[in-house]
Length: 108
Image 1 (cartoon, helix red, strand yellow):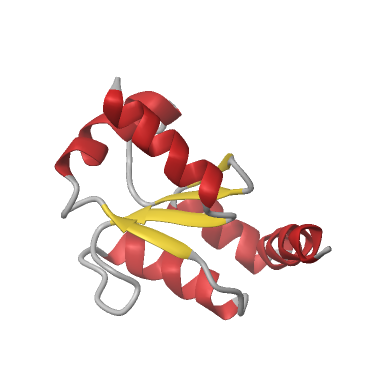
Image 2 (cartoon, helix red, strand yellow; image 1 turned 90 degrees about the horizontal axis):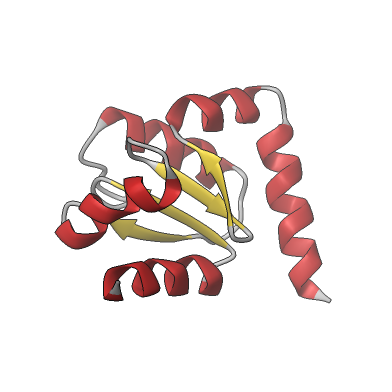
């Protein structure tokens, strides 16, 4: 249960958070690399958790989120999805709108 509280704390305290394999500067899988690239182009800061360095999170987050794979993008406490969804949203402009709208919400 302690790890679930840790995950909830991370999600609550980071407006934009990606759980990924590796780091934004050195992704350890192609899916994480693609998702981080799309997110980075949006131009806002985001937090990340390297699930390869956090085995407890890697095991428990898929159960918590009901999403079996990584990366997982969370925005404003909600799971957006994995690589395919992030890329699709980026290509149609929805990711940029979501990120901008969310950041502006907290600038007030």
